[in-house]
Image (cartoon, rainbow, N blue to C red; front, side, top):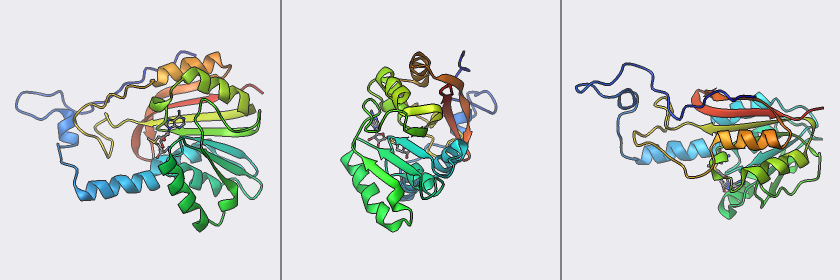
Length: 228
Ligand SMILES: C[S@@+](CC[C@H](N)C(=O)[O-])C[C@H]1O[C@@H](n2cnc3c(N)ncnc32)[C@H](O)[C@@H]1O
């Protein structure tokens, strides 16, 4: 498919003039990172409406096996674990020792802890069996992928026929994002367009690739599926 254009920023509101702040400034005045901002950001990493909305969009069912790519502190994994039932599972992969340590520390407090597997891995080399995964979520990880092609071929190996994939990148360049900063954010890593191409080469049907809102925040997303 032809992906929809993915703007790096959206700038609603009036065009800027020399006497008025730009739309970006008006929506989010420049601010220093205060302790309150840091606390809000930490809470966002711990559990956010964006992560919840992403899992809800995937609509995990009882007995399904989910894969969370670049799970971070585990916001999507812990939410998903509540949705897959006793026979389901969530495999949370992350190459960061710190992130995994926090997930390990969180897990004992969850009644569904046995459903959550935490693995030291990257998307380019997945520690899961062929065709064993029903659904994949990757939140804020696309720009960190070392190799979108290898990631897509690993996904093609592990996702079962009829499986589904959702990538979500929060768009902090959009003035509507809660953590928007006026300075443009330009990650060095791959963009979503590159991953769309890799997924299509890997045999996935890319259903959507566009700018939208999840959990009240502006995001860029890719949804894809395998054939049955
Ligand atoms: C920005 S954090 C996002 C965490 C979480 N998904 C969220 O939205 O809160 C990205 C995570 O991806 C991990 N990561 C980096 N490179 C990766 C790769 N090649 N494959 C999988 N995860 C990766 C990082 O260690 C980090 O924890």
